[in-house]
Image (cartoon, rainbow, N blue to C red; front, side):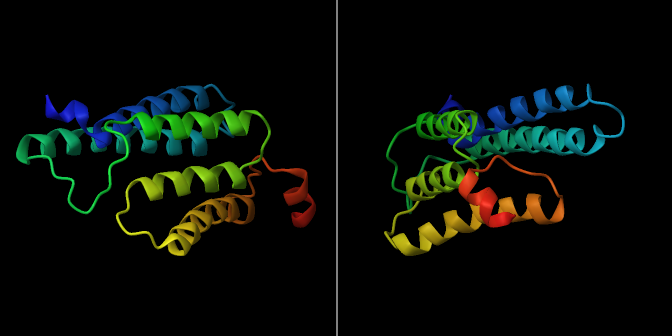
Length: 154
């Protein structure tokens, strides 16, 4: 089965599992604080399922092609490894911005053919800082941060 070798299939399964388990956890919160996290987690779960369906349909319709993509590792090993290291870094108290920047940069560089390093570093920094700013400024939800970052924000 060609679909089992695609990253979209495995990523979609992981997103669906994480999303639906987080939704079940969020539904256990009190009624005032469970709506937003449960909705967000359910959306992640359904988007993961959509990614699985997309991977299944595209694997049946196309032959594999690596044009425009430099593949370092076959299968989902690198992505799973990056996200496991990211979760361990958050758990170890290394903050959100640094580990997220490193994870985004690793995943961006894995899928690019050209080596415009400054552009890709800027993309990874934009994702990490953008998400941090959205949660901190708009949603007023603190993300894990180092003391240095906390001092800058206070």
